[in-house]
Image (cartoon, rainbow, N blue to C red; front, side):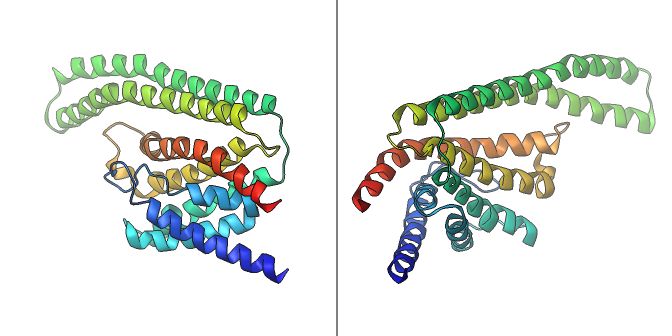
Length: 266
């Protein structure tokens, strides 16, 4: 028992140290924080090896230390969401240690995820004709408007024009995220050599981090949303740019490293 505890603490410390180092191998930097990197890789592997609770605790510690590397804080609650909570939720990938799921189940989840993304895109698309119609009506009203009413209509027109430009980009990002997420699951299901659904664990851990960043964006960064764009759409698109690629590049390495670590214990 003592040896197991020492091993857990040692691997946890090493995972945190490796994540801190891997963060420096990142691509780009988003204006309100975040970048594409392999920093989640050791956290995924640790959670898969030791389970959900240890994974969450190590993620929490990493989030606090990582904030010293790349801190962007506007509020204490935003700090908690974007650092300890976001990286702590990566530990949810440890759920895979407790479940056994066939590759068929993973493939079905991948298809459902892709279908959900497509449905979401269709819902956004349905707003475009109404927005275009409203824009035309406002332009007609502008011809006879005066004073404050004219100023208000001009602002509304500006917002709608930006919205009409922004939504097509949003659709592309959501489709790409849906396809990448589905491919991530399919890729993992095909390549994994263990009974544990590693790909589902990584997917769940990535979603956990995405959810925390998403909440932070909606609550604390809505002012950065383009005019006429709901804060939740802006936050979702922004964080998809960071979390989905980072998760996608980690999965092949998790599939490569985790089984070998497991074999070394036998």
